[in-house]
Length: 97
Picture (cartoon, rainbow, N blue to C red):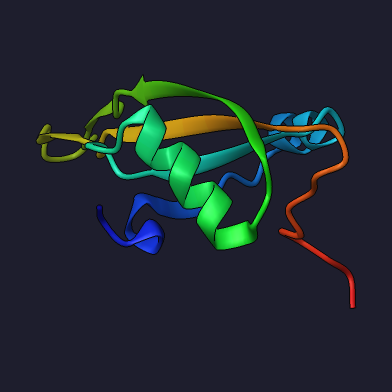
């Protein structure tokens, strides 16, 4: 098995993801090759919580065009995971000290 910290790259910081935290759903950017069972095990090992389900989505990067030189480029693709925790479990992502 891979190192769990190589699977979970970072949490997603957005208004929508913060709204889901109240329902016990956490959003993470994960490795593109990670499977749902690997993500499930990684979250449980890192934070010691009980995971109920994992949903993933592959996001395709936008194509960009430079205005002056007309060179086309592309932002990188990414993969996100929506991790639902069992009731009573929390991940202390952004605590106020």
